[in-house]
Amino acid sequence: MQPELPFADAPFAYRLRESARARCVGLRVTLQHGLEVVLPRGCDPAVVPGVLRRKQRWIRAALDRMAAHLKLFGPPQPWQLPAQIELPAIGRVWRVEAVETASRRVIVREAGADCLRIIGRISNEKACRAALARWLLAQAREHLPPRLHAVSERTELHCQRVSIRQQRSRWGSCSRHKTISLNAKLLFLSPALADYILVHELCHLAEMNHSRRFWVLVAKHCPDYRHANRQLRDMWKHLPRWAS
Image (cartoon, rainbow, N blue to C red):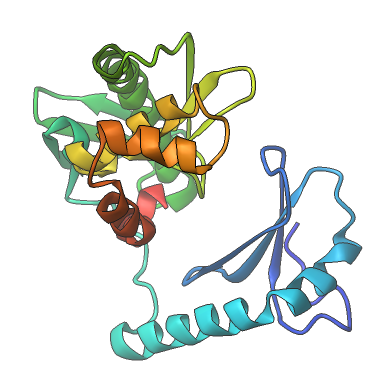
């Protein structure tokens, strides 16, 4: 659902999106969609104006930053496939070859050790993004669980269950059932930042909070965690367009 200003008393124009994964009302400001409100499934949209009023200082600041970006760099460019894809966390780079066909479906195939061939309706941004997302998820499922296991052994914080997802606003999470969920987009981080996320989530197995005891445990395995947290705040902005 994508109405604009569905309530007369809403202080901002916004795009509305429902998500089965959302646990609370979320706000995002992007160049593509402006202000986007993400609702948990079944949530009454009538709550949105109140949320926007409470968060209007943050929203105005985010919209101002977006306006400044547009003034400096102009509007987003038309869709095109990336010329190459780099996954720093695993030290891999692929050049991208596009093969336009009449097929509605887009598929990604590895053509050698350093080449990705993307086949189908290349002009269809949605189909291309979906195909690349499937490929990224496969890469993450191959590489992240073994890496988590290695960090688990090193820290002696043992994880029994891990899932790989593609969250929009979390690099990782740990449930009350001790399941660690990792974002496939971790592959875009440096090895050091990716490992910090793994340490962070493993520490939640011992401390399911962000108390002082939790941060003491994090510091034991990652003394420079404050610097890592500062870096992570901006990393979402550096994701490639097809993965954001």
